[in-house]
Length: 304
Image 1 (cartoon, rainbow, N blue to C red):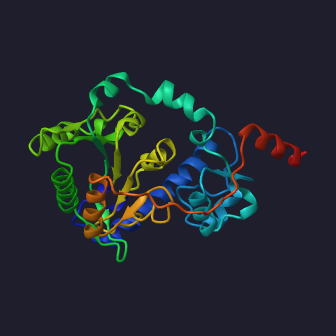
Image 2: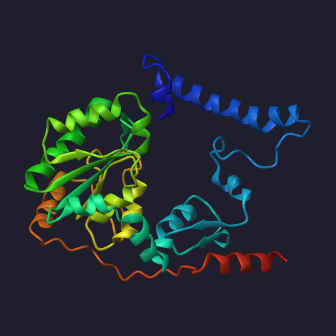
Image 3: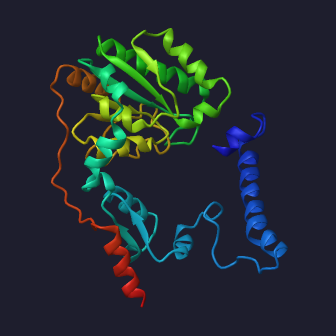
């Protein structure tokens, strides 16, 4: 990503990648060697930088414990080489008693609730990154290809969900990109009057709360994970029609529907529209530790 976004396009990809890796190495030397020396301290040579190191087995030495919020995160870390005894799965706040408090005090936006009335709402979590890479060969998916595919998806959704209200919830970073937010507004205004592009800085949770369907596209949208905890009963779709690198992050999720075929996508949204959609339920059990304070106390006892 850095090679394609930061280096002029006419350079060969191997040179661009080499340049980015060299830049990371220079950053490692500057932050962990030069700056400490300037302040009269020895270089930090014991642990590698997370940004520079490509060796997860080395990096995992940097902490005695790693907290994760789901079995999926646990499996990802385990596959990457993290030692099981260092991984602790903690119950996410949205699964605990605090869920009702958060929903009442933070997720409810009275203005949005009034807008909903009897409307059916679908919210699309719009990514800020405009290029991608094919999962099988890492070939670049250009900005133009990504844009056209995303707009095509929106048009198909509108066609199926006739009479619904649609929110495009851009990533907060979109607000920082000059002209990009206004461009999104103009683009979707020309597609349908039923679409509203929200302020990127508004909390996604408020739109998750009022939506009947939540949809995300690569790169990985962590708001889908939030939605799966906040409103697990709703249809939550992770769409990966370009079969992008890391686009299948939610492939094994129990609460998020991963779709990488257009036929299945059309079939799924038609089922949702007709009220025939049923979420897959698994009997998979995974023990989560409840109560972060108790966990920390137990860790401290072990250390002493």
